[in-house]
Image (tube, rainbow, N blue to C red; front, side, top):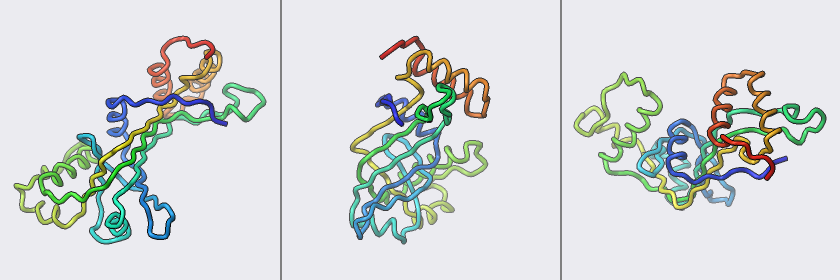
Length: 207
């Protein structure tokens, strides 16, 4: 029940989205051949992803054997019930969302300056209101903490992204979706309407 989706690769669009979401999924190769997917918080900056954790545990064990990883982050903005556009068929039921997926290699960050910057990215994202002393290697209280925790840098080699907001819908269908979102009025519906206008601001007609 999926139609053709609109793919984007603009770096700025992806960077803005990755600042918006806080949670992602790290894909690892496991010893038994089954993929291992780990949900976790992440930070993004300077073209790389950062995740952190204990120096021990399954994640570190697997990365020592194979540094190839995938990482995905997504946000669902609106579920679209079928009756927004069809009074009888279930097929039009859909969702509008943003997603970014990368393939690359994971590296352990040992440089304390980079660690401090990486964890500062986390704090700016997860605690933007502040309320803590800056993380620097000049502060001895942080140095021991930086040495103790593991910081992993994911260096992307391939990127893909989908921002799906009705770009390929015919205009009558698009108008019915917008009307349905306006009438429903859930917290994310107004944001979804804004994004529909951003990504498909003109009459498309048939495609």
